[in-house]
Length: 186
Image (cartoon, rainbow, N blue to C red; front, top):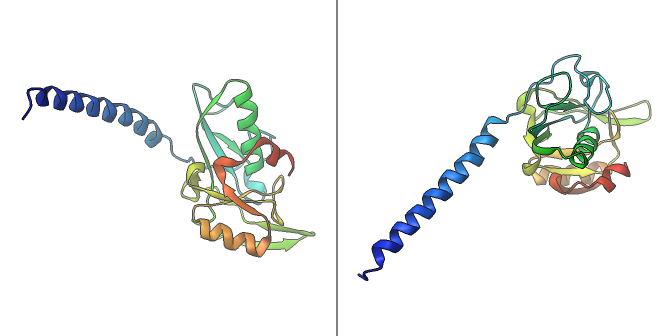
């Protein structure tokens, strides 16, 4: 064994310890942020509509060092469209999103129905119906409507998203890849 081996081992140990401590701080933050139940009668923080009175996917966002006006975090939204519009606007104002959750249609027994010339998808507001955007694939530009027009429909199982797009049209992409331009074109 080389005379340098103990010193290198110690450095590796210290570097590994620093990495674990650093990661545990990050993991602790994300573990604390969980989807909240969207209360009956609650208003969308983007457009003001009553969330539980409209169909389609909904969302919520926690921001670092900032909170929505008038209630505890997270900010809550009547649609995926409002969720993204709010995030984009707040990012321009210097707010940093810590975590965004959207309805996960792979985790719900959803219904699609047609009425009034629109094809709509059911709304789900309970905490277990949400997943982090990092784990979601969305279907954009389908024939499905939500509370704010054409819905961006999220799924945690990409196969579910592909099957949905085959049936209702649209394109699949990671939820994290949604752009301001895509949302603006809906």
